[in-house]
Image (cartoon, rainbow, N blue to C red; front, side, top):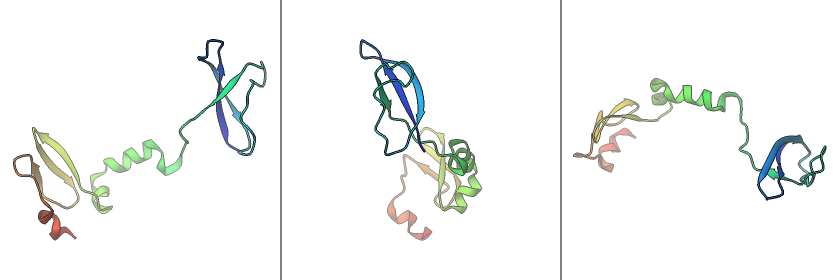
Length: 110
């Protein structure tokens, strides 16, 4: 069953105490605090996705330049004003604002 987050609605309409409640998806949202009876509203929260898709795990994977290249990505790092150097993948070694790349420059990479 999912865990929902609620907040108490203060008399002036602002949010108060925040608490969690485990409910079935089919259950209607709470309208009153289960202990105090104060009015409450459900707060929309971002879903928690653990495992290999967590933020920490993804950060480690995307910082590994060799792995990015193996996955088919190209990574450029800013090396100066309008200058970017390739650190992973296929493509030109350097991209500059003075000589931008065009579609024809990448056709040999397919």
